[in-house]
Image (cartoon, rainbow, N blue to C red):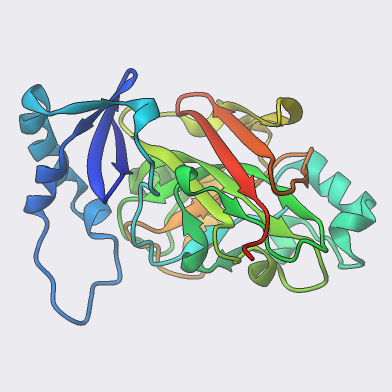
Length: 287
């Protein structure tokens, strides 16, 4: 199932070129009071929501995919986890390109570990990217995104995919410079996720997904998840050895070689096998 959030916080299911409005399925979610839970309620209750969706779909109103505005499929992730230099050729380009490494030591992922991005950087694909620090290089990074569906700590590789709710396309934007990754990658709108979440029962094997990125039609990145240094089960095991993963947590799995700058007016397109395609507008700094 392809589950999305669109327009004014509507819940949708994508089938073909139509988005079916199943917002009424959110009625099964528990009412909350302060303090709010530290999980995304939709993802934490996905089985109940899906059962209600199945009942609503036959009579649901639909819209053309191209007529709606896609929000992030996950509204309230507790954390956004990201994997640096997790493709060998990207590791090599980061080490050789001074505009990427800025005299920082580029270590293997097994040594440098993972990093966190601010949840305030999260947007849906229709929101686009607002460039900040235009005097610096701002790069695109296409990535497969994993949405955690079941809480766990010290999760084994063998059981890792049991903890996955689904998969999305991710655009991990970064401002180059000497600061820590988590700062340069946490700018508002620099974590683009969408256009929908493909549930793990539909995309059962994320180990060999082709994906590519273009800027204004120019090919920039092209890879397959089989080339990951740490694959998705290994990343989940690694992350959960340091902190509990909760429903709705988002995991950016790493980007391949071919990262490059974008500026206001550019259009980034990412196509990902088993998930779909997104088009993201890049805007100049707000005046």
